[in-house]
Amino acid sequence: MSISCSFSRKAPLRTRSGFTLIELLVVIAIIAILIALLLPAVQQAREAAHRSSCKNNLMQVNIALQNYEMAHNVLPSGSVNPTGPVRNESKGYHVSWVLQILPYLDERVAFNKFDFNESAYAPVNKQVAEYRILSLRCPSNPTPGHSYAGMQNDVEAPIDVNNNGVLFLNSSVRYDEILDGCSKTIFIGEFIEGNQRGWVSGTRSTLRNAGTQLNSRELTYFSGKAKFDERTQPENSTNGSGGSQASQNPLYVGGFSSYHMGGAHFGLGDGSVRFISENIDEGIYQALANRHDGQLISDF
Image 1 (cartoon, rainbow, N blue to C red):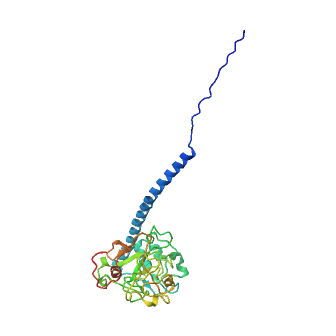
Image 2 (cartoon, rainbow, N blue to C red):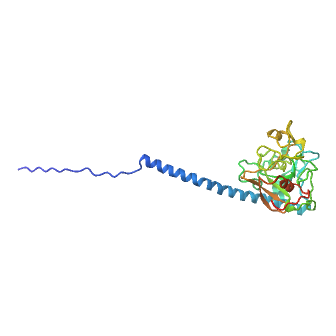
Image 3 (tube, rainbow, N blue to C red):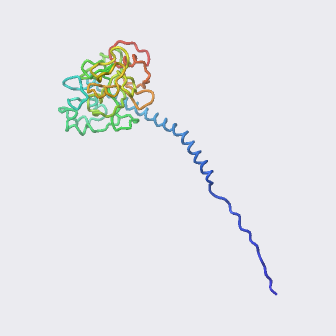
């Protein structure tokens, strides 16, 4: 007798694993939304850190100016050159105010290496001219160039001996000559028009004025009477406009600007650093640039 047994086996149930295409797309969409929401906050936090570092850097430079004045009883010359006006060219002595304050920026080695018997552009001074000083650069600046310049004049005019700022051609301004008060006089500020001839050059590379609107990208002059010196203008330009042709004039100086939204940092004569709005009143801005115009400034 034979016994046959037959068994029927059911196939085991398979559990589904992984994502379907629709689920994967949903996850990607959620991640994209989260990134879009968080990215502006990250950028704002980074810019806030950059602004804080920029302010600290400018304060170091401002303190160096104060220490120079305490040691010499006079502020450094904005630009040292035998004759004026200063042309924005690599021809001339053109020793900048920045070079003169190097010992007070903890950069005495660079100061000692510079040969003051030669011009800012002499081959013997090339090593110093190419040296990068971190305290001269705003962290928001995407270029390796420096970011700060001295106040040369209240309106657009060539760098010369008769400017009314605190740093200009062969200047030797004392604190008692700043009649408007040091807390209401701009000494230095930010600018973004590129490295030009470097921080050793006492040209528009280290000097600017309040003759153009703060943060203006079109080099727009302030409107009104006698707001610029005709020597700095391109041909056929009128008051209130300048355009990119103005920067091609070797006597043109230009204004202040920054990579920060809404304004720029400025160092005042009392050692403080203020963030000034790009919408500041024209008259107040230019009064802050002039060391002895006698204008009353309550707040800015």
